[in-house]
Image 1 (cartoon, helix red, strand yellow):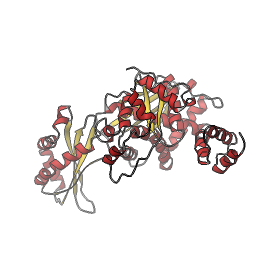
Image 2: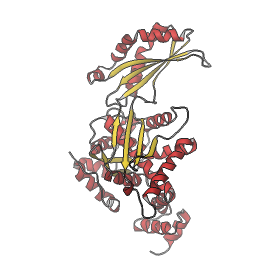
Image 3: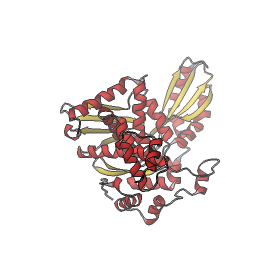
Image 4: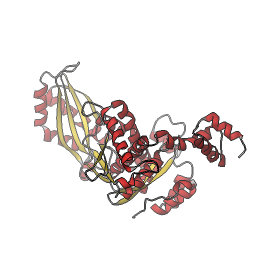
Length: 426
């Protein structure tokens, strides 16, 4: 089903009207509409089966980012996040990028690493070669544990062996199983395979196997996005295209050279990515861990994105990072709204989800850099945050917007000021 991701005047609608528009665009059933519109989308008995010690459920806003256009296809993007301005910024930047042809995305295969740690060796390099000499045997043992994955074209594809000659605990050898996990995130699969080969690795090396666990630095499972934006699309009422473009590149350069800036810069990228990961029931902590480790892969923490000016004078932005996400297993299949999120995005593979996630991260980064390079981050953010402050002060109904607008107009967004405004007659 082909959809149109444009959502004109979406923010002005009430939640029910917004939902009606998404239902019509995506073709949701009445039952699926009810999952979003009514409480108890996640029954308590299902929640109790997902994790331990359950006493209730904790809700977060479920939003839709519009205007995303990737590789010639429109995508509506579910986002679950509590921070104001995130969804608005991602949608606004996607609207600009759409006019420039949208996002170009790509990804590598869904390869994950399982690590098997070997200790107690006096000949670590000899042990490495011994393991590699038994490569085919170890791959066969690993693959014997998941015939379904093999049938889908996945499975353990290769082995790497890393030597740490001198550690505080002596020589250490670490075997990496390189596993194609297809449309799964893959943690359980690779952990099972690591367990399966452990005994044979001990017999081959004469060492003692300790840890048998996946790595969340999924540097073989990368997703990428690129945008190229003509200057005419970047100018604002108060800033020329040249000022905006050079401001964005200067702000990116700050993050590229300074880890103190890069930490906040990358947090802004993850502001876009994490809500997509949460909305689809994937492991956002695994994605975060891989992202920040990847940002440090050259020995210094730096930006996950790049921003440049092309020879034509266009603004070019790119992102590349690990994206270990799945469409099967875990909360992705357990949580009803996670399944619905996958339907809204009309996904055919985990790689598509990975590419959408990084595109949202790139859009979010562009929005933050654009704001920083022009009026400053607080103006737009505080305008949206003002509604939260009004609610904290006790505003309800029409008073929420009245109080929020007054605070924004006064450039004074505080709970005590909101309470003062609330006491005044409307």
